Length: 42
Image (cartoon, rainbow, N blue to C red; front, side):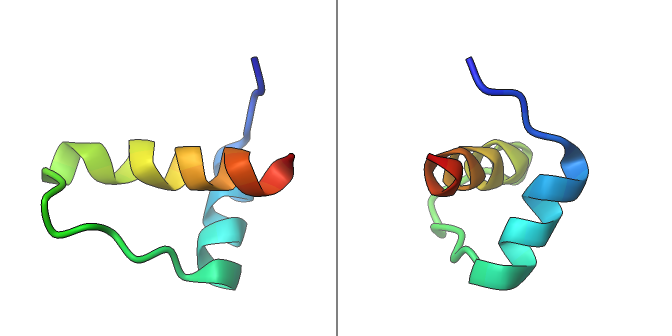
């Protein structure tokens, strides 16, 4: 399990500008950003 702070997720999103798939619902956006940040941290 990896814990990520909201600051880390937002910083990774600004740095890499994650493209959110159009098929995601609005409530899934933060989960997608968190998953992308976790993949980049490894």
